[in-house]
Amino acid sequence: MIPKIRDAQYAGTVYNTLPSLPQVAFAGRSNVGKSSLINALVNRKALVKTSKQPGKTRNINYFKVDLVDLPSLYLVDLPGYGYARVPLGMKTAWDELASRYFEGNRDLKLLMVLVDIRRDLESGEFLILDLARNAGIKAAVVATKADKLTFSARGRRLREIREATGIEPVQASAHSKLGLEEIWDRIVRETGGKV
Ligand SMILES: Nc1nc2c(ncn2[C@@H]2O[C@H](COP(=O)(O)OP(=O)(O)OP(=O)(O)O)[C@@H](O)[C@H]2O)c(=O)[nH]1
Ligand SMILES: [Mg+2]
Image 1 (cartoon, rainbow, N blue to C red):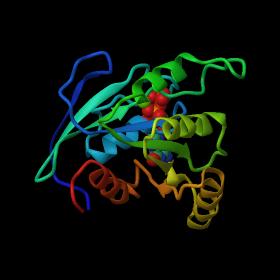
Image 2: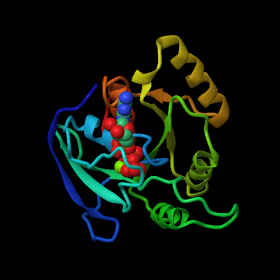
Image 3: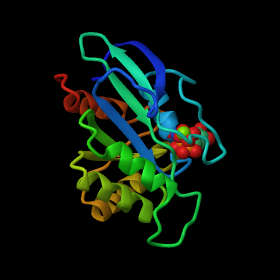
C-alpha cells in the first residue's frame, strides 16, 4: 500500500546535524534514476533535482517524509557512482563518502541499490552490496526504468539480476509508477511501521 503523505521536504545533507529518524537510502550508478524514484515515491515532480546529465547529485541529501498514521522518515539520495574511472583497488571519493555514511549509522534501515533494468551489473553494484553487507545494512535491489522494456524482456532481465546479486529485485518505473507499492511496503516494514 502507498501510505498517505502529509509532507515531503528537503532536510539537509549528511554534513548537517539533523533530528534522528529512520533512513532509507538510494544508491546506484549515475543516471540510474535515484532522484526520479524518490520523487515518484512521494508523488512530487521536482522535490529532488533530476537530470539527463550524469553526476547531478554530488552530496548525500536527506528528504524528510511525514506520513499519515506512520512514523516520519528520511529518504536519502546518495550521489551516483561510476562516472569517474579510477584504477582498480583505489578508493574513490564515492567509496569514502558511502563507507562513512554506512558505518555506525544505526538509523539506516534499508539501502535500495538501483540498477537499470536494461544494463548488466558492473563492479559498482557489487561493491556497494559488499559495503552494505559488511556494515550490517539490509539491502534491496530495484530494477529501474522498467517501462523501457516489454513484459517478457523484463522477466528475463529480472532473473539475470537475481542470479547476479542473490537478491530478488523489485521492478520499478518512476514514469509508469510500476513497483512503487512494493517499494513502499518494504520501506514501511523496515522503518518500524506495519503493513
Ligand atoms: N524511461 C524512464 N526514464 C527514467 C526513469 N527514471 C529516471 N529516468 C530518466 O533518467 C534520467 C536520470 O534520472 P535521475 O533520477 O536524475 O538519475 P540519478 O540516478 O538521480 O542520477 P545522478 O543524480 O546523476 O546520480 C532522467 O532523464 C530521467 O528522466 C524511469 O523510470 N523511466
Ligand atoms: Mg540524482
